[in-house]
Every structure is written in C-alpha cells, then in structure tokens.
Length: 204
Ligand code: PRP
Ligand code: URA
Image: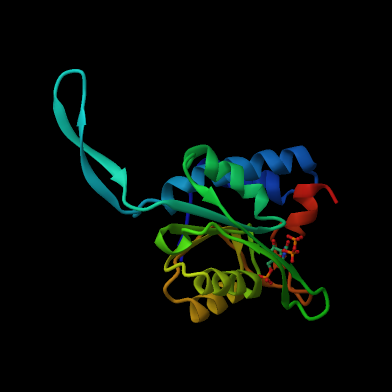
C-alpha cells in the first residue's frame, strides 16, 4: 500500500474531514485530491518508445503502452472521477454499482458496465473509502471476471482492516490512498474518517 503524502493533499483532506464543511467545500477538496493523486497512481504505467519530429529534428518520444480505463464504484467513486479524467483525458470509463448493507456491512452489486477492451487496459478502480474492504474487493472480482489483469486501486481514506482484507483477496493489486486511518467503529465506519462519503458528496 502507498500513502500519497503531500502538503496540499493534507490541507484538502482537512476540509473533507471537517464536520463544518458543506457540499461545495467537500466536492472541491475531493476533486483536488483525486487530481493530485493521479500523478503517483500512474507513476509506473508502461510507455513505449516512438519517434517524434520537432520543428528542428527527429527525437525520442513516448506513448502509453496500453489504453487506460477508470472504474469508479457508485456512488461515491464518482466524486473522484473528474480529478482523474482532467489529467487522463484519453481514459475510458466503466462503472460498478455497489451498496453496503447497513446491518451486515456486506456489499451488494446492482450495476456493472465496463468498456469492451478492459482486458488490454491499465485499469484504475476508484472509491474514496476502503472500510471493511468488501466493496473494493468485490469490485476487483468483477473487473477480473471481465478480463482485466492490470489493476490498481485508488482511494481517499483506508482503514487497516480494509487494507488487510483487500490485500489478502487481491495481492496483485496495489492500493494507493491519501490517508491510512485508525480503525473501524462498530458500524464499520472509518475513524476518524469523514462520515458517509456518498451522502456528503451528493448532499443527501
Ligand atoms: C461506501 C464507499 C464504499 C464502501 C466502503 O459506499 O463509497 O463503496 O462504502 O465500505 P466497505 O469497504 O466496508 O465495503 P456505500 O455502500 O455507502 O454506498 P454509496 O457510495 O452509494 O453511498
Ligand atoms: N463508507 C463510508 O462512506 N464511510 C465510511 O467510513 C465507511 C464506509
């Protein structure tokens, strides 16, 4: 797991965590963090050499070796999507819909729409919260079932319990997070966390 530590990320995360932040402040800060995280999340993505001609001479250039696919988990993953697409403007986007049962904390799948070329792509799964890890791990199962083999997972806040579960079920998928928090409470919320990410982002 990689914790992406950066002063601007830390400052924006403070807005996101604050109970006094409204929807606009929450949205803007989440967008900024996703945008900043893109650099580290894609750092080791493969490129291939190609020749480019400047107005002066031919020289070495680089192309991305594979197409990019971004997959936010509905709903809250949508809050990080535009931050990624502002940098990765060429990326295709798929969606996986999951909600967590409030009693059992188990994820339930209700939607999956993925681009057809997912097997050839570098895939970035996106969800702000890695709590018990059930939602992200099930989403990764769906991506693998669809043929994806090159995967990474980007979140905003992870709990140690979620990291452990995700790494056990998907040891091949690197996790990138902006923060690693203390623990889960009895309702499986991340502490200190930010509360309910979907409700805060969508103002519900
Ligand atoms: C939240 C969050 C994750 C999930 C994390 O979604 O966005 O998808 O909980 O919890 P887990 O790691 O314990 O599975 P939620 O189920 O609240 O749905 P929503 O985004 O539609 O509000
Ligand atoms: N989902 C959230 O939105 N927040 C948490 O703390 C845990 C799961």
